[in-house]
Length: 302
Image (cartoon, rainbow, N blue to C red; front, side, top):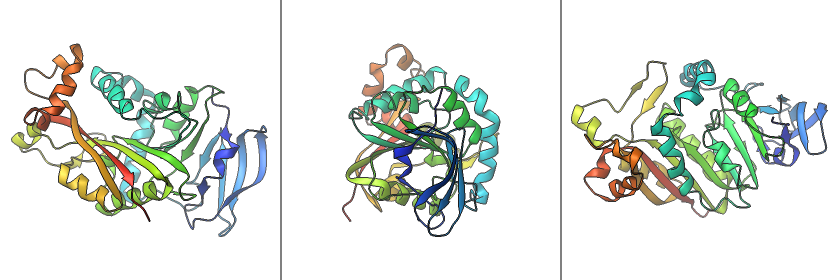
C-alpha cells in the first residue's frame, strides 16, 4: 500500500499559479521520509494546497482544470475501477513492452509521468527508476494506483493539470506520457504541455510520448481526425508532420515511428508472433497502418 508522498520529491514541485515554492505549514500524518496528510502553502502567493492520502493535490486552490477538459475528468473518475480490466486486453498488453523497450535506461533516473491513470505504465517504471512522480487529473484513478503500490515504491502521486504544472527547472531525467497527448483538446494547451515537459527536464533529459496515429485505415475510411468518444472524452488522431512540428518547437526529435499495426486480415498475428511488430514498423506501406505513434525527443539547449 502507498505510504505517502516522498518528502524529498516535494522540493521538485512549484505552485501552479505563480511558480512559487510550496512549503509545509502543518503535518498530521507523516514520517521522516513520507507525508500522508498535510497542509501546504505557496511562499509567494499564499495559495493553499494539501496532501491527502499521500496524494499532493494541486487543484485545491484556484488551479482549475480548463473547462474543455472537465468532462474528461468526470469520465476518467467514472471509469477508474474498470479501466484496468479494459487495458488488460491483448492490444494494450502489446503496447506496454514496446513502450518500456524505449525506456531501457531507467536505472537511477528520476522520472515524471504525465497522465499516469491507474498505473499501467507506472508500475513498470518504478521497478527500475530511482524516483518517480505520477501526475493525473483523476483523483479516483490516483487512488486506484495508490492501492497497487507498495511501501517501498519511491513514487509521489500528484493530482494536477499537466498543461499547467510547474516544477523546479531541470529536475527530471526522463518524462513519459502514453496515450495522453491526443486527449488534450486544443493546440494551445498541447503547446503549454510541451513547455511543461521541456522545462522540467535536465539538459541531457528526454521525453517519450505515444499518441493516436491517423493511420491508413482511418484515412481510407475518411474517418475524422478528431471528435469525442462515447464517454465524452476528446480525441485527436495525429499525423507525423503535426507531431514533428509540435515537438520541434521546443525539443529535438530523435525518433518518430508508428507501431501496433492494424493491417487488414493479418494484424491479429502480432498477438501470436510479437516479432511481427518490428517488421511492420520497418516496412513503409505496412507501418502506415500503425494505430499509435511513438515520439522520442531530447531537450534543446537554452
